Length: 97
Image (cartoon, rainbow, N blue to C red; front, side, top):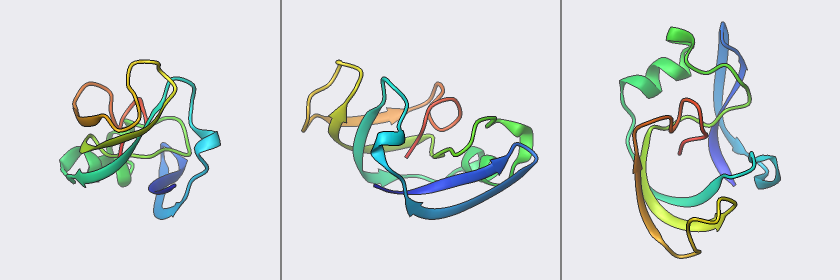
């Protein structure tokens, strides 16, 4: 999949749009074909290493999105479900979009 991927460390973050193998997603992840995603202050902070909010790399930021489920490792959704995701740990503790 294509994603904005952060590499580096909490002190030195570098980001770029890149291919990210879905096999590298953590257990329990839900893969969503993102139709809409906003960029806000927290995404900017994370992408520049401000506040050291992300501690594990590589990482995919993005704290709110809307799209369609394409794969589910959690058992809570089915392919084709339309979803709106925002808040909690999205894009900080869990991969965002």
